[in-house]
Length: 333
Image (tube, rainbow, N blue to C red):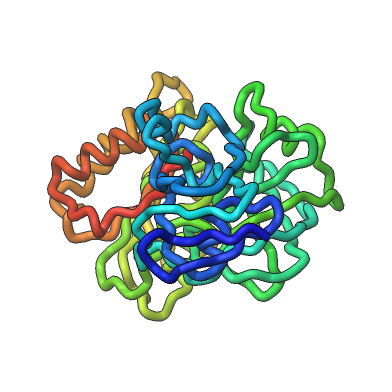
């Protein structure tokens, strides 16, 4: 197995067959910075000083042409072919609470949530703990490259990881999941990953903002918060946005939680004109600002959804003076 050495230190770790430099570092307990895990965000950039690698996604948008000219690579897309020397700054906040594990999982149940969102329930060969709001990489048969999806359930002894996934038109991965995968089939799973997990130690109220399959991690966060003794009685506001009335979902799941209607409040919104809809109209960030502008700087804010929604939410939170340390999201949607 290739050995990876950190320039200017005595830190060294090995990279298992087929693994990447970044993920192997996280498995070794090191704080290798990252976020999306699929080559898009650029947070896991490092300088390759010695050695040879294979780039799993040569055209990854997380690297600019200037980065490439300077010898920078993406940790999540760099598979070492030889021993390597790398330069980067390890950061303790990226050390995994539960180191990610590569293994197999069996599909045990499927259920529809909306016309284009479906929940896929997998049982891992080896139970691995995770924090509410984290995600995993799924390796689907016949699909090139891993896909990142967030768990919707919470940590459990049965080793079940549930994913609420929205079908992407012409998407190879969701096409495989929705059309080809059957109960009893097996896939590769790697996780947990992610920094947008529930901060159970915080005494602030919670606001969850979601759109599309961003439903999944926000449901996980809310479920865990409702079951955490430290958060007993905490107010949780959950905004979910869809394009039309038939895209709206999540209320029935939240209604099963203790405190729904008293501590837990659900606020749906649609972004297009729909005669079948008589509720809030507009965008998630607009409704959050309208309902909670005075409270937001005092809350822990979690969000997940399409990239444009995420960008609008980030701008809104900055404009309203919400401290960055109270904002939690993973940039892979």
